[in-house]
Image (cartoon, rainbow, N blue to C red):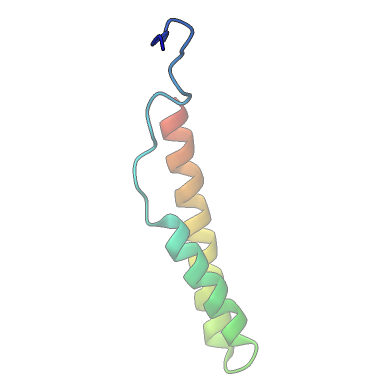
Length: 67
């Protein structure tokens, strides 16, 4: 059996993105937003703010990693 690796290429992407907490905060904001429909408008407001902030932060990190 021969070990012919000449045709192998590096997998894309060659570097992985940095770890981020934005997806976790986005998920928590969605949960609080939905929770607010049952209990209080404050949860809707807090969840909405968390969703917007986490989405903006995640998009900013993705754009920064892309450059």
